[in-house]
Image (tube, rainbow, N blue to C red):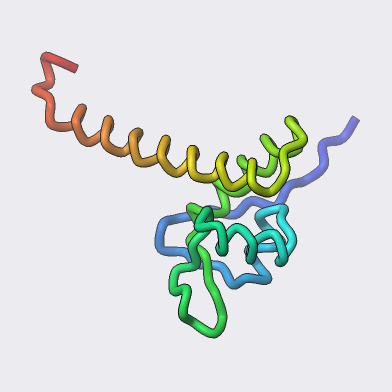
Length: 108
């Protein structure tokens, strides 16, 4: 049995993807992405730009949300809710890391 090679992409916060690239990487159709932007669940880097781009961080959360959607047969509104929850979880994890960094070493 031979393992299939996977394409690896290193993501960082400053990396941005065009709408077409985001469609390819996220697992969503362009129409679904546009609807999620309308719902406020996804936000392009510059919503007023003629050509939307999306942060690399959004690729990770969107792919995770798509897996959850597929596992639980959620509609697009459910996917929007999952994306909002994933964003909130990320924000809280960053806050916890920041608070831990401020603790004296002997309290960690």
